[in-house]
Amino acid sequence: MLIPRLCAVAVMAAVLAGCAGQQVRFDGFRDANAPAAQPTYTFAIAPNSDAPNPILDKEVRKRLTDAFAGTGNTVTTAPNAAYVLRYSLGATPPREETTYANRFASAREPDMAYTTADGRVLRHHGLYAQPSMVPETRTVFDHVLNLRLEKTGPAGAAPQVVWIGRAATTASNDDLRATLDALIQASVQHFGQDTGRQLQLTIKPRK
Image (cartoon, rainbow, N blue to C red):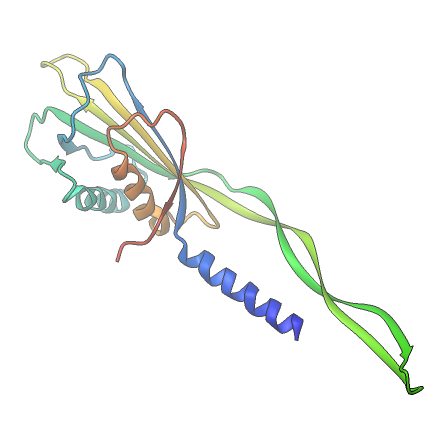
């Protein structure tokens, strides 16, 4: 029958959507007056003294350090590092978001009757699936990871901002740990780059 088949297709689409990955928006900015871009950097990751949750802050630093492993970049704990990476992580206040989804409802066709050549009367009762666009409103949060790479200067001199990255994703709750890996992966993929525009990325879970 048509309706069970349509339901099976809808279920499969939902499963595939869940496996597709996290949608992340990423912007990268380089200062035109900064030193020439390098293929890789050696830098220290500075703790975020303004973080409201110092335990989560330690987890963020660890995940950042782990994510840069194998990329050619080196995270150092040595004092007086030439470059320092600073970061902040947070969620925006909740907001309402309305999307439109295809939904199917059963509907009946008008009953029909016709007479065959041998005089029999046959009746047809029609039932079919009627597609419609249905608005769905949900409460969402934007999770945002900001990164800033600075080149340290002589003692007493202000550091020079070399690069700024911003990764953001929309989630159904304010659990930052659920999307943190995707935000970090997007940032590491485009670390140090001037993207020229906002990138729309699909970040799949790491195995």
